Length: 262
Image (cartoon, rainbow, N blue to C red; front, side):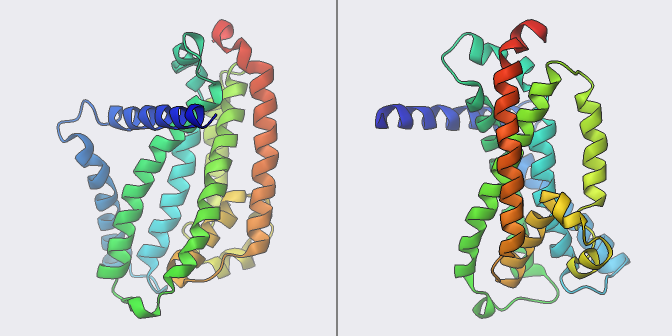
């Protein structure tokens, strides 16, 4: 059993690395683009919101950047897997690979990109941010709370991917529908708003949009060295497991039809 588990993890990691490298395969600079993209993003945010249109929010650029990093991981992970049962059907048709492994390896490749983005965020936050951050005042042990937050984000993305790709088998326009839903969820997320304003103006949104609570808690842990809001974290995990159960049910119901219908 241990050998099987180790072998499976190695295979997942190999597929994740291949998937990540393929994104930059035809580009001249290759994997360097994985670093250039977050560097460009943080530069644009800095010029726009710290120089041209300064905000009355301390560390607003970092505040905005971490929200967008978390949001983009969710959107890229879900949007990129809508047609995964079609694109990668050869993996589960002609090998003993389970369908769930295809989703996991794809999300693992997204995690590699997430790490590049987070690295750039921390460089900016601790070394460049105008307000400065004394490392002695940062309680790094609080960063252990990032583990359950990452787990919730990963499982929510996995669950949403399973639901979307399974529905794609019987409803090809689910990709367009998801684009509309993503736009709505973006407005209902505290990405460009202060948490206090968001909670005051849209108090119900945080309870119907699990990404809202995840973003709020990421900011609390990373930027303020505070414990996450446990009530929000509990709600987010409840949503996640509910969608995950739905995802497994849909995958079992329609996954077997993917090869013949897509």
